[in-house]
Length: 242
Image 1 (cartoon, helix red, strand yellow):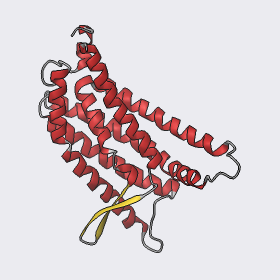
Image 2: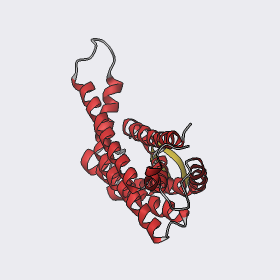
Image 3: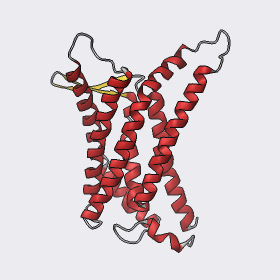
Image 4: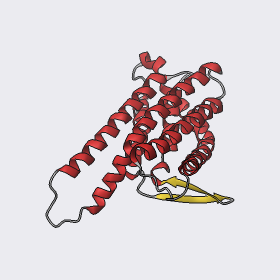
C-alpha cells in the first residue's frame, strides 16, 4: 500500500466513523433515556443518541491534528448535509403511502422524536463542532504545536458544554420532546439534563486523552507526518510516494 493510499484510508475511516455516528445519533436521538447512575439523589440521565457522540470529537481532533483545520471544517459541513439527508428521508417516508395493513406506528414514533430532536441537534452540532475545531487550532497555535492534552481536552470540554446546553434548551423550548415531570419547575429539570449530559461527555472526553495520544503517535508514524504539530496538508506536494 502506497503512502497516499494509507493517508486516504485513514481519513476515510475517521470520516466514516464521524458521519456514521452522526447519522445514528439523529435516528436514535431521544427514543430512549438512560439512567447511568446517581450522585446522591441526583440521577445521571443521558439520551441514548448521546452515547456515541463523544467519539465524533475524537475524530475531528485527529483530523485537525493530522490534516489541518480546513479538512476538519469540511467534514463538519458534510455532517450537516448528512443531517439534512436524514431529515429528507424521514419526511418522505412519512408522506408517501404505506402498505395497506402493515404496522407503521414504530416508524412514525421514531420520526416524531427524530424531527423533535433534529433541529436542536443541527444547531448544536454546528455550534459545537466549529467551536471544537477553532479552539483546537487556537490551543495548537498557543502551545506551538506542543501539549496534545491541552488542545484535545481544551477544545472538547468547551464544545461539549455548548452542544449539551443547546440540545437540551432547543429540544424543550422549540420541540417539547424532553420527558419532563409535570407539576415541577422546568428550569431545574433542564439544568439537570444539561448537567447529566455534560458530566457524561466530560468523563468521555477525559477518557479519550490517552487513546488520542496513542492514535496520534501511531498515525504520525504510519502516515509519515514529519514532526510534532506538522499537518498532512503541508505535505500534499509529496504525492503518492511510499
